[in-house]
Length: 224
Image (cartoon, rainbow, N blue to C red; front, side):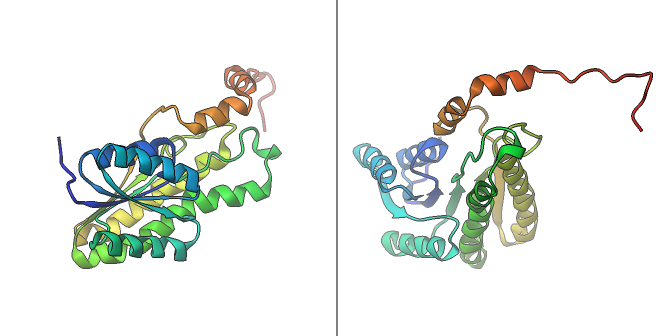
């Protein structure tokens, strides 16, 4: 199995879910982890698990929606590990409103877009210049559900993930000549805190919506 010994890796959304599991797994392979999240309690717990397993990690409280905070996080990692970030994993994301789009709040739209899309753009913008200069670096972005097809009752989440996928494809083409790789991955169905949010948000109603089929068209009176 590939070793990441002494490789500086920054994981956004490292406090919980897939981001946390990736951080713990990479630490077990010898990586020097930068754990980035908004929640101090979640960061502390992830850091504790990594240290108990003999790994090395730095906790950084940061809102990925704030570009200056993300830049400061990368600089902290460079100073702490005496080496710039070589791998960036963008796992920070919000589920957002669950249910019909027409019932959602515009305020919630901004929060989801700021975290899921702008957060990825901020992290990439902060990390790429150094990677291009060194002609070395990898960025992995979690696209997840919604990147390839619509998701009824999760419109905002799906929209941001589709936008992230196109963003990554575009930037990857721009930086490939500099030996920098930018990729999206979809880890598939995984039980995380978002699963709990979906269940709490009315899984029964959503299930009924998925199974309900539209009435067949009246062929005697085609739509005009």
